[in-house]
Amino acid sequence: MKKLNVVLFHFLCLPIFILFYSNVNAQTYGKNGMVVSDNVLASKVGIDVLKKGGNAIDASIATAFALAVTHPEAGNIGGGGFIVLMKSDGNVTTFDFREKAPLKATPDLFQDADGNLIEGSNHETIKAVGVPGTVAGLYLAHQKYGSLPWPDLVQPAVDLAENGFPMTWGLYQVALRMSELDDAYDIMKNYFRNTEGSVVQPGETWKQPALAKTLSLIRDKGHDGFYKGEVAEEIEAYMKAKGGIITKEDLAKYSAIERKPLKGSYKDFEIYSMAPPSSGGVALIEMMNLMELADLKKIEFNSTTYVHLVAEAMRRAFADRAEHLGDPDFNPELPLDMLTTKEFAKMRFDHIDMSKASLSDTSRYGQLYDGSSTTHFSVVDKDGNAVSLTYTLEHSYGVKMGSSKLGFIFNNEMGDFNPVAGVTNSRGQIGSNPNLIAPEKRMLSSMTPTIVAKDGRPFLIIGSPGGRTIINTVFQTVLNVLEYDMRIDKAIEAMKIHHQWFPDEIRYERHLLSPDTRDALELMGHKLRPVNNLGVLMGISYDPKLGVYIGASDSASKDGGAVGY
Image (cartoon, rainbow, N blue to C red; front, side):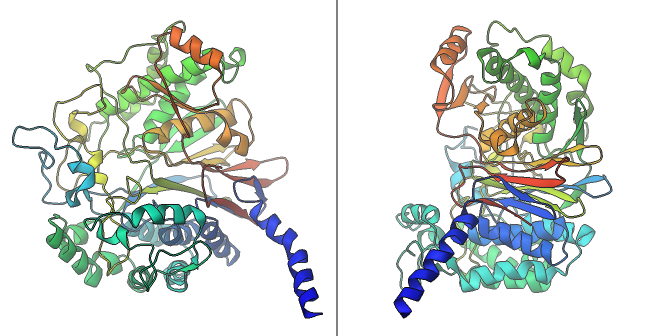
C-alpha cells in the first residue's frame, strides 16, 4: 500500500513538474511582476523579493547576486555592467558599473618591445583583469532606489552558495572541460569539484563555501565588504602572487556612477538605453533611426532586401561607434547628439545602395567589445518600475583565475581597450584614441540594456549577452516587436544576423536563412558566414489589452527562465 501511495504521489505531481518547467524558455504571464534571467533559480529569487514587497531594483540586486552563484559563466561579482531603470513615474536613469583600468595600467600594457600586440596577453593573462564594478553598482542602485534592507537581498545568494543547488547538465558539460585545465587556471580547475575532489555530477548538490563567505561579507558590510577589508586584502595578495597590477588602492578608489540615459524614438515609441562607456545605446538608436527611414511595409521580413538593409545599417553604426566612442570621463566631447539624431541617420541612409553591399576599409573603424559570455536579465514590478541589467566577465568564465579563498572568478575586460594606438586592421583590431588604455579609465562596452516605453510606461524590457553580437541582437529584437508586431518569444527566436564593419561579413544563424537569399546576398557583394546562434535574449513585454506582462527566455539558454506572478 505504501508503494502504491508513492507511485500515486509521483503520478499526481508529474503535471505540476511539467507545468513549472514548461515556463523555462517559453512565454510566461504575470500581472504583478516578472523576472527573466539566464537561470530559473535566480529568476525565482527575484520574484520572491517582489512578493515580499520589494521593487524592481530590489529584485534586480537579489537576482544579480543569485546569478553570481548559479550562472558563474557570466553572472558575477568579479566583473561589471550597466543598469537602465525606468521608474513608475516615467523617469529613467542608468547606473554605470563598468570595470576600470588599474592605476598601474599603461597604454603599452599589452605590447612587446616593438610596439606590437602580444597575442592573447590582453585576454588570457592576469593583467587582463579590470577593477571589478558589480558590487559597487548594485550597492549604489540600492542606496538610491532600493526599498528592502540590503542584507535581505544578498542573503538568498548566500543560501544558494552555502547550501548548494542541484548541478545542471548545462553546468556539468562546462565542469568537465574546466577540470582538464592546467594549473595556471587555478580556481577553474577545481571550481566544480566537491570536497572529495570529484566533479559534481548532474543532480548532485553543488556547494560553494568560499563564495558564501565572500557574499556574507558583502551582505554585512555592503560596498566596503568587497572594496575594503579582508576581500580587498586577498585580491591584492593574489594579484601580487600572480603578477597582476590591481591593488587595495584601486579597489578603495572604485565607484559606480549614475548617468543620464540615452533617449531615442521609433514612431510612437521611446527608446531608453545606456550611454558611454557603453556603445550599445548609441548604435541601437542610430540603427533604429536608419530603419525608420525605410518603407518596411514593402520589405518582407527575412527577405534578401531586408537582410541587406539591416546589414548596411549595422555596418554604418559600428563604424561610427568605433571611431567616436569611449569613456566619457576621459572624452568629454563625445558627439552623442550628432550620432543619435534623425538628421545624421538621414545622411547615413542616403548612402545605402539597395542593389549592392558597401565596402568596409581600414580608413574607418569598427569593432565590438565584450566577450560572448555576458548575461542579461529583465525585471518589472507591480507598480511599473522596470530594470534592464546586463553584466559580464568578458570571456566565458572571464580570465579563469581567482583566489580559492574568495570563490569568485575575475574578469578579463582589459581586452576591451584598443591595445595599440593607431593600428586598425581588417581583422578587427582598432587603434582609435577614445578607447586607449589609461589608469582608472572604463573600457568601451557593447552591452545594450534597453527599455522601450509607450504612453509613459515600460512596453519592452530587453537585453542580451553575445559579445560581438549584443547590439545587433537587441536591435533586431526591438525592431521585430515595434515594427513587425511580433510576440516577445517570437521576436527573441526569430532569425538574427550580425555585421560589425570588420571583419566585412554577415554572420547568420545556420538553417534560418534560405539558400536563395544567401545566393542573392552573395551576388550583391556580401560575404556570409554561418554560426550556430546569435545572442541569448531575456525580455519582457507589456500587453495593454490584457494588462499583463509577458516574459520570455531565449531557447539558447540552458538553464534560463521567466518567472512571473
